[in-house]
Length: 99
Image (cartoon, rainbow, N blue to C red; front, top):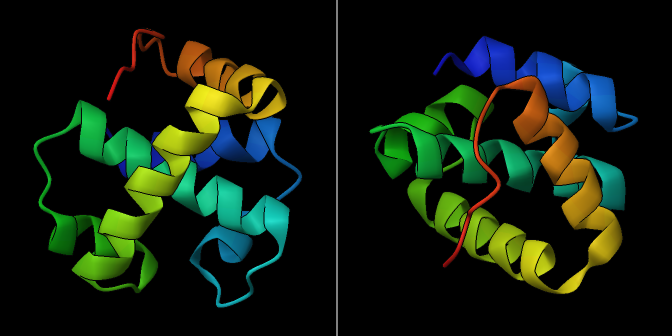
C-alpha cells in the first residue's frame, strides 16, 4: 500500500487537497480526511504509528487518536462511512473494517 495512492483516493472523495491533509488546520473535512488517511495506513499496512505520523508531520499519539476517531466515525456516521467506502473502493480494499 502506497501512501501516495491513499492521498490521491482521498482527494477524489473528500473536498480536500494533499496540503490540507498534511497541514495544521482542523476544519471538519480536513480532519476527517487526515484521520481516514491514518486509519487506512494503520489497518492495511505494517507501518508503525511513528512512520504514519512522519507522512503527515504528526507524532504517534496523534495517530492513535486519529485511528480511534476514524473508527468511531466509521461505526456511527453513515455519511462518513459512505465516503470512506468510496476511498476503500478506489484502493481496492475491503469494507470489513471492524475494531
